Image 1 (cartoon, rainbow, N blue to C red):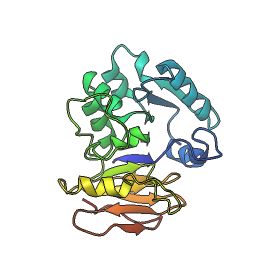
Image 2 (image 1 turned 135 degrees about the vertical axis):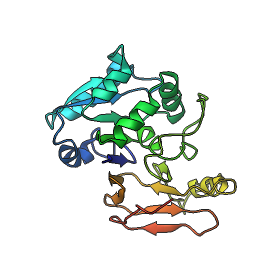
Image 3 (image 1 turned 120 degrees about the horizontal axis):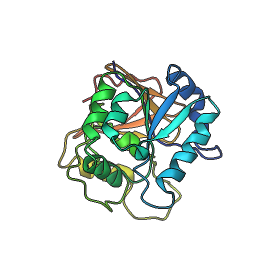
Image 4 (image 1 turned 90 degrees about the vertical axis):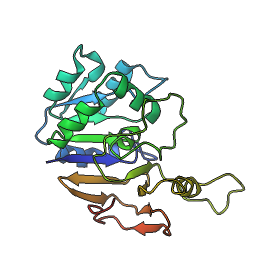
Length: 235
């Protein structure tokens, strides 16, 4: 049975890395001692070792060990043997390209479908959708495909921002960009605001967190969804 926690972000304003999610993660990973961390979304700023150390520091507070996937000579075996997986944020194009290049995207998909608990934040959440076509990231890398793992039946726009009525910025809003996507595509898109996440258990998908999410469907007006909304039938 699938078990995922798909978060908009790793860090909310005024809190430390993953701090706002730690109570949820303690329950989510309650049967897991060691979590396999996938650090490949980070294109610059932090090395894979430094990124893994940052994650390790957060999980220490709830008694969990972190292993970096980049340290394994056989990453496929590491994924198959993992008791839990966390894919962190960064650039979604870089992440997906690395997963394809290392031939491990399908393996992650398979083990999660079979029940390995999966945590994603930002880019790590984007890849749980049908495709990464609704990421906010610049395409600094060109993966072989935009197709992602399809662990949920829709796409995500993490870090979703509402228009600021006081802003003088005349560029496109997130809503405009998603509507442009729906001029050519029909997959629904969920705008996931900071501090919100999806709890997936089997075929059940529930919106969690303190904020509403904004749902976009082709040829329909966008709607606001309350925390607790069941998205299991969204496709």
